[in-house]
Length: 321
Image 1 (spheres, rainbow, N blue to C red):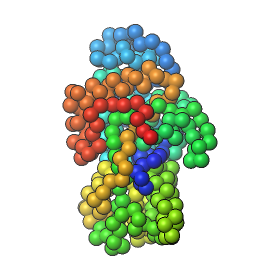
Image 2: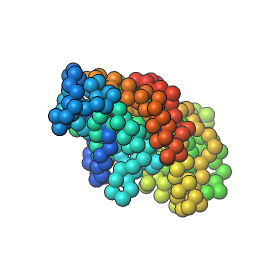
Image 3: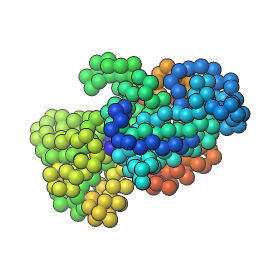
Image 4: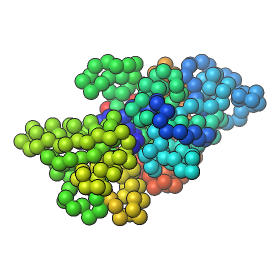
């Protein structure tokens, strides 16, 4: 929908930074915690006053230990990464968060809202973190807009997944799209505020620099609207994160609506967004990601949703470029 700024040379999608407005209802209690201020984590008692024996509970800021919950902003319109099923937010990110919660001894409470306000909502303290297939890049780390102008404080990322951008088309590929260059002069659908929207803008400039027509980019509020545009034939293709595009092609119309071109463009990391001032929470999350990679629960979560292609070997902080 997500994850979802510089997604691949011309299409690296991972949702744009930010999800804050509560546009989609849905909260899911998983397992983990969160907070927005830094303080020492020497306490070993949870919100109920009972001793917490989770391996990494003591690494958390004291205020998160006290409340026992990490408030997570997401945009649950991006299967298989995050979506709503039977009133609950489910997918790769919620399952990874549940595994993190077991290591940290707190709950991750997911709330779905608009994707383009997620980062802002972390900076303002509305959410402790954002986890929504958000691509880690320097622009978001430094709080810059597309022109390099400073807009905010920026955020830190705990990178836990990697994905490339993919092009999806109608089943049978009636327009014969085989690469990004084939999109020159064509109409392409994309979710607004994502890295692939920026990637398409970069590709469009490449088209005109090469003497070809610019891409007609149609940006929509959510990914479902972009998919509908491709399905109707109004756009020759859509651009999305590879695991999301594959899941879409597999499920839509029983597998008879879309197909995905067999190529990923410039894989980039997805990161958990944390306020720059909250380094203790950031570091605890990194340690927790490494722990679930080691104990196998991370791989299990990816396999459940067919997202093994995005697996990493160890967590990183701000590895995006």
